[in-house]
View 1: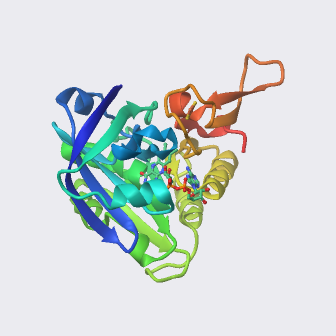
View 2 (view 1 turned 90 degrees about the vertical axis):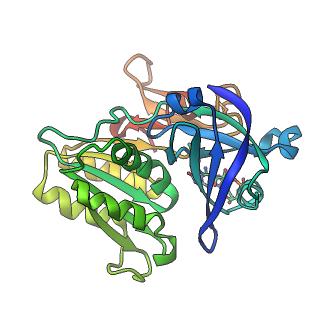
Length: 272
Ligand SMILES: Cc1cc2nc3c(=O)[nH]c(=O)nc-3n(C[C@H](O)[C@H](O)[C@H](O)COP(=O)(O)OP(=O)(O)OC[C@H]3O[C@@H](n4cnc5c(N)ncnc54)[C@H](O)[C@@H]3O)c2cc1C
Ligand code: FES
């Protein structure tokens, strides 16, 4: 992992409160990036306050840049969303384990990528990875839910993946897109006809709990990318711990640091 100050290449407003930052990065950083990994970002001026560094998924990257998508929810995300081209950002990463298999071409199983809200940043990293390497996405389904239509972001670029075989379904809580409801409804419906599927999901905790239950009931294999609050991002503060099942502990459970052992966990290991 690398610790460096990076220059903002561009800052694009995607919706009322969601921004895409493209940042410069060294080639080594880009080689170490992988779908599902994340960075801790902070303003250079804010470095004296470590709490101002915040975790964001690496959504897409090239040979000397990477992008994050930031929803403004508080002080740190607001500061980052306001950065102009040329300003320096403190970057620590790539961090975390990422998804277990970046190769999306499935042999027999269908692959369902399930995104809720800003979970799309992590989920889209798998799709951009495949697209940028011209991999086939036949047998891959993106199920994407958000609060309303303006928060369904990156759809233009993701729709371009349809020519590679990706199938996309969207849904919103308020029905402002074509369907109303939760993204888990789409998953239940799809798994009825494709019981041998594999599922990767990222989104708010209630959504992940629901995905876990659906996987238990259908017997499908799956992984959840957790977004627990983080202070350090590299295993020293214990701010991000999550209870998980353990075969070695007497109680059958242990705590895991999401920043180093995760953020991606086998779905049935997570104890919500
Ligand atoms: C591994 C990982 C990857 C992430 N990737 C992205 C991403 O790609 N894009 C993105 O917009 N956000 C992402 N997040 C969430 C993002 O880190 C938080 O929104 C951000 O840290 C909030 O900082 P803040 O200073 O703006 O808000 P704060 O002032 O710290 O908090 C504002 C509000 O947001 C809530 N909040 C803060 N962090 C979280 C969290 N992790 N989960 C739930 N609620 C939270 C607080 O409880 C509070 O209500 C990710 C988080 C993790 C752990
Ligand atoms: S965020 Fe500090 S240990 Fe995980």
